[in-house]
Every structure is written in structure tokens, then in C-alpha cells.
Length: 578
Image 1: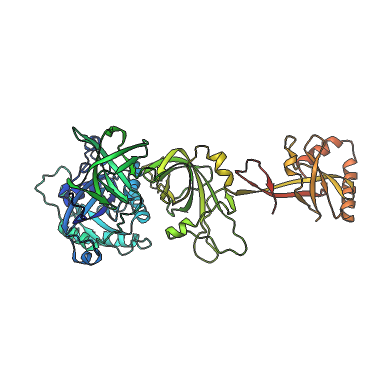
Image 2 (image 1 turned 135 degrees about the vertical axis):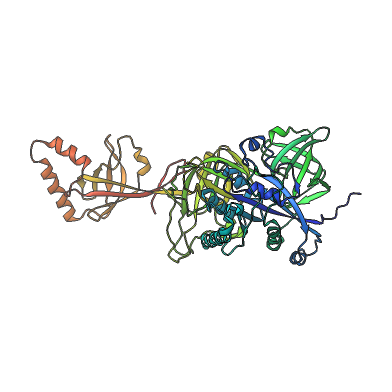
């Protein structure tokens, strides 16, 4: 019978992020003793261009540090495996970085000690802030500094980095100097890396027992896929949630296929099962590896395939562009990046309700959207301080994807402008948030959006043309000739002289309306209107006068004001007044 006891090695995922050419891959190579199939730029394009184009994975194992033995509880581990996720540093590949960052426990931010922080270094730092809780800064390439000035330069850069991180969640994080590949990529292998032993000691000290829960449905981030003759197709990746065992059925949602698990390996060692946080190779049969290079594998039926979604939104403070409704952004959701059109809105709070601030926990997040609530359309994201000083009130947005995306509920969403100049000194990450509600129906515009009560305030202004009797006036310039006036019948209007009335219907064929004033017109209003109509009657150019008045009301006119709101997704396009 197969041994079902838990593995003795605790897996801990470390993301290696930083600017292109900061030496991330050299660092991963210097640290690692065991490389997986996707490690060290196996991609032929990577070798050709000399840069990482894909997520690389490698690992090294150390005895379990003392401080972790206490926090393991009932699970007894005897070693700690650091799995290094080498993320590409090139600006155009940031979508790959975002996908990789969602599976890491601790981040190593690699900085070229000579160049310091660069644009993509800052973007990697932002991604780290959204996806993990701990970070170590690696000042790499110290061998390029002159011997006599080396320590002074390292101290200066360390001080500068601490200042940069002062207002982030990584304030006071450890900073260590290394030379992962002295002499550069072409240097002989005899030149030993510097500072790596100290870095491993620091990693051991910073490691913590990550949250590992085998319950719930399986979600595995896939980063590589290849076939082994006579055995089947191996899918490698990291289990984000749930667990996996031999003989389980798994779904590849992007292809809508389900396959049985033949075997499971963790760094080339067969295991009967694996759970959240483990890095695994899963062998399945009758599957073409060319169909899946990157994506997710899950428990059959557990993931959503969405055509649109409602998300919470928070602008990234370093993004300089405007966030306007109807604009298009690159949206990274789950492990896919797709273009989507965005529309912003916020909640209309009733007098007895508390403020509506950004959720800080999954429970709050789940309660931060309801179809029962009233929302107000925003032309752009509001960057305003709440009155109580708690920061921006929570804003939501509707995302309409250009193609359907597959993702888990309540997942992280990042909006970027990846089409902006990659050489420009500007942050391309625009906003982040959480998925609140997904629309799986292709016809969501007819089936789901009418339930979404987002209104737009509308104002119209016209003028009183003449009085019919003490209780009725005829108005003009409020509507166009082709407007369906039936939609507006019964709506209340206010005259500039103070009376309120309601629209009774159309008058003639040119868009004029009849307005009923239940309380009757004031005496001074009648006098005002009769005197202005006499003035209009004087002189021979009556037609010219009336034509100019149609477009430009003068001070003598009594103006009509109509305020209402319309629900954007209401198929009846009804007008509503509060």
C-alpha cells in the first residue's frame, strides 16, 4: 500500500524579481542545487537573447531552521526547500511577472548596486506589495565596484533603499550585498559567487511557516508542459489552493478538458499527493503539451469563465495617467492577461449608513458588493480623501473583457497599460482590486447588467415660451424634435421663478412640452412672461428674434430646470427622480 504520510520537506516559494540585467538568473543559479524543468532560461529565445523570457523554477534544500520547528504543529518536517521563482525583468514581460508573483511567499528584489532603482525595479516592488508580505533586497554585482570604494558605495545604496522603502509595507526589510556572478555572464565558472552563504542564512532566518491548507478545490498555476515518451504529458506548476492525489481527475479549463492524474512528483521524487504551496510535476495521459504552456489546472467545474466582472478598485499612487470610464486596460486576473473596457462607479449611501471604505479582509471583501445597492456612475476614478481621514471611499468598476477569462472567485485583479513606452520612466501599473462578482453568461448585457443599479445624473434646461392659462405653460428647448417625450411624462420640473410643475406631454411636433403647475403661476411670473412676450412681438425681425432665443436664453426668459437620473443598464431607459 502506498505511503500516504505527509512529505518531510516543507516547500517555501521565493520570488526573484528585479530590472532586466540585474542578475536574477545568476543569483538563482548560484543559490540552487536542484533545477526543475523550467529553470535557468531553458526557453531557446532566452538563450538567444540572454534574458529570462519565462518564469524559471529551481530549488535548494536546507535543514529545517529551529524557529520553524515550533510553528509546524503536528506536521513534522525535517528539511526546508526554497523554490526560487525567477521572474523575467524585461518591461514588456510584466504580465508574466504578475502571474508569477501570485505564488510566492517571500520576495527577493534584485537591484544592480551600480544603477540602483530603475523603472521596472519599482514596478516589481509594487507587485510585491500586492502579492506577498515579506521581502529581502539584494544589492547585486558588488564586484563591479572599485575595491577601495566598495563598502562606502554599498552603504550609500543601502541607505537609499531604506529611504525608498520607508512608506511601503517593506519598511526596514533586510538588505544584503552579493556578487552572484563575478565578472559577468561570460566570466569563467571558477570565479566563486560572493555573499551567497550569508544570503542563505538570511533566507533561513526570514522563512516562516506559510499558510498551507489541503481543503477546498484544487487550483494549480501551470508554468510548463512537456511530454515523456511512453508515459504521458507532464504539467509542472505550483499548487495555489487545495490538494492533489494520484488518480484524481483534474480540469484544464482553458481547453475544457478533464484528465486523470497518473503520477505526481516533487523535484523528481514520486509522491502520492501534494497540497497548497507545493511545487509539482503532474503526469496525465492523452494530452498534447503544445496546447498548454501557461495557465491553471483545477478541480473539475471549480473555476469561473467570465465575460465581465465587478471589481473593487484602488489606484496605484505612482501611476500618472488618468483612470477614465470607457478606457481600455490590460487586466491580469487569475493567471491571464486580457484587454478590458472599464467603467467606474461608487455606492450611493443612505443617511443612516456608515462610510464605504476599501475592504481589508476576505469577509469584508465578500460583503462589499450587492445587486440590491444603488450605485452612481463616475466619469473617472475619484482620488479624494474621505472626511474621516480613512482614505479614499471604496470604488468599484465593471470590466468587460475582450475575450473570456478563467479565474477563481475573489481573486486579485491588476490593471496596467502595458502598451505604453517600455523605455519611458513611468509606472505602467494603474490599479488593483479584488473580483467581487463575475458574469459567466455570454449574453450578460441582457441577463445580468440590468440588475446592476448604476445611475447617471442628468440635467436639462429650457425656457417658457408662453402661458396657456394660470396653471399651464408651454416649454421649449428642453428636448430635441426626435425625443420620445412619453419617457418624460410625469417628471417634475422647476421654473427659475420658483414654481414647480410636471410634464404633461408633448405640444406640437417640434419637441415642445406642456407643463402643469398645480399651485398656479405667481402673479409676478405672469406679468414677467407677458412683458417679455410683448418685447418679443415688437419690431419686424420676429423670426430672427425667436431663432436667436431658441439657442441663447436671455435674462428676460423664465427658464425650466429638469433634474433626473437614468439607470445605465435599464433596458426600458426609464427616468427616475428622487
